[in-house]
Image 1 (cartoon, rainbow, N blue to C red):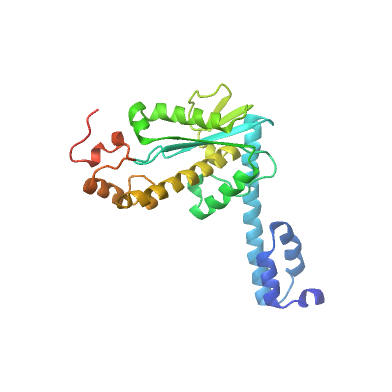
Image 2: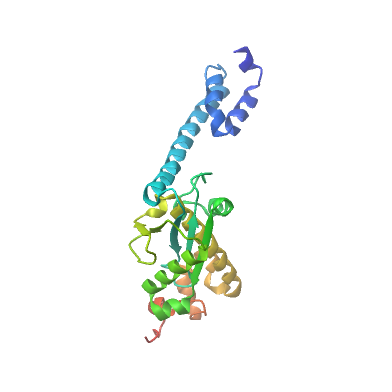
Length: 261
């Protein structure tokens, strides 16, 4: 215990709080019998953090394992979309090939992450990815061909933009028949590493586009709603009509005179 008492309680608490996951077990073992109340509390908190982080590591490792099980050890593209349900802005699809190592800890369905966390993870994904492809279908094209066709266009475009010959293409959702090696998986963005990575990069990319559009069309609150049908966005459409980036075919219910098709 003399070695443990060489550090003040505050120093021990800081050490336990700041330690990386790999060092926590040894630190917890070192200080678990320390009689000081502040240290006992710090050890307890560190134990909870260790349990959470181990569970999180296991979750992410499971996503990489499922990617391996479904796609094999070769070049695997994960594909996901964002913006399908928006009423303004593009439909965006991303295709990402993630190697088994190094792992991107923290990846998940983009909807489960905070904007700040998505930004950090997107940068990490772009740093380690073997390939990344992005494709946008603009509102006028969505109006012209419909969402189902636009989705196939965007997925095919993102896969082509990745500029690799994949051994497997793993796609979130139901079959779309855009690639001969595709395998679709419902809720794949929360189950497969490369699909989750694609969902994050697609979301961050499209959000940046919508923030840019907000500067051009501030009355529609696009930086906040990202083109989805929030109450403020719908009220703005009723007050100002549609902008050039609105999907006319999606907005008929919000206009006094619905568009003709």
